[in-house]
Image 1: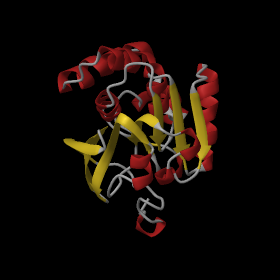
Image 2: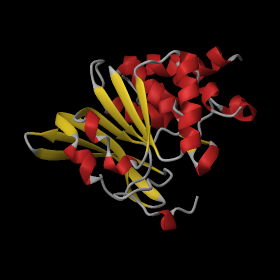
Image 3: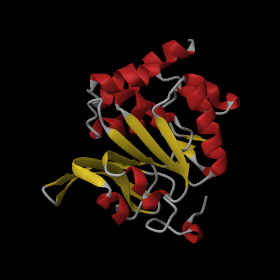
Length: 218
């Protein structure tokens, strides 16, 4: 099968059977060429049901995990989204398909450089990148309608909660260093409402309000 057929197969066998229902999310997953976000030697595995390694000891998340986190954000198309952890840039492009503007932060410069190149090649002009500590957020561009954290965090960083707009949603893997659960937070009338979803395992979020470098075994 070619890459187009593999994407369709991925959606039909990995996403829909596991309960992904948002048609806009499914359309984005069918469209975005995931194989362009991994090294050429790994492209034959790009649509498999697994995370894959990228540089800097990081990973591109399993397709289902990208889909469920995106679906939990409840994107309608006019949101300003903050992504913490650019990685390969794949999640950012999925978000760019479904929202107005995406601001994405990554602490590893070579990842940002590669991701920016992919954004240019694919023609995305609504993705804005920054190198730095993602746990601090992006104060100058706040507030954000949605925030997604694509690395494991022991708790939601306080600056991110402060930068979330009223009625906004945060989705993040929260828990221990080697085992987390997806947490969905909605800010409503000054209160934080929490929903817990699927178990997961992500690389650690390194930063002032995340894990320290010393605990990063990657």
